[in-house]
Image 1: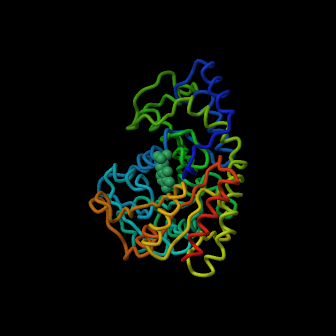
Image 2: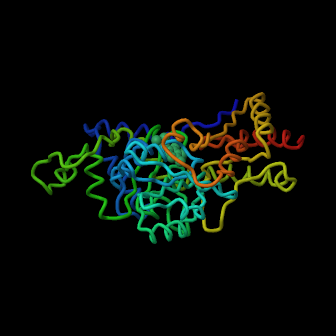
Length: 377
Ligand SMILES: *Cc1c(COP(=O)(O)O)cnc(C)c1O
């Protein structure tokens, strides 16, 4: 049996959790939350990181920070996880979905100008599979129209674009530490704030709308309700679990990269025969081996592949049902163009097992069954 994913675990997490318990402070913003934020700030070279309880929470905070309101429009890909879009729709925004590119499966910035209206209040590119979007082009268009850009970097912890860490390139960046991501505390996330004018407002939003963070720093002598916010802090126990993984982020990603590269080399011949397509990594991107996928020519072959692998005890999965054709997406958004790539990729992509605890033998077994299937095509 080879699972599709197992939560990353180093073994040192226990000691840090014990230490957090002994500190007698396990609510939000304890010592480990601060340590994680400091690490994230130095690692991404960003002025401010705020640990939150999920990637979704980071996106929701971004929507609150940008003061998204009913009638506003927000541009995002359709081929993505639900909360890239729902975080903004929750504030009343109308979603404007654009197609992805054939090669990277990222947000196609060439549709961006056609999607922009005078109601556009945010652009949300997703670094799919930890592969950076074409950020220079996106930021250039956004700057011309003065529209803020929020990076959904949920899958891209440790990835970089032209040497700059994903999440720290645009106005705001959102990381996820969900169990399925490279670095994990089960549930978890961080909002990376790259513009200093957002820092104070973000601290307030995260602290239920109060200026408690200022109070703790001694900048005000009592704290009070100043804005609309909510509860986005994780317990310090969560941060204690996350901390050793954040310290090891490059080592964890490098280990995944060995598996990723092994897959990539093994499937090369099948790509040259036109049986599948493999992931494409542009020169400007240093990726984090978040995901390995194969792309088939049609939905039937993909279904056969998934059942074949399952018969041999290997779980392979696909995603995403395009948001623009989902029941909620149809109500809450509109799309630009015919969404050709989004629809095709949704039907034909399959993800292979890839996780930190995966052994060489497991990887070889996945490759050997996949190769058997592919050789018979
Ligand atoms: C995982 C993910 C999220 C949500 O993160 P959670 O921590 O599960 O809330 C958002 N966007 C993308 C692209 C993701 O992959």
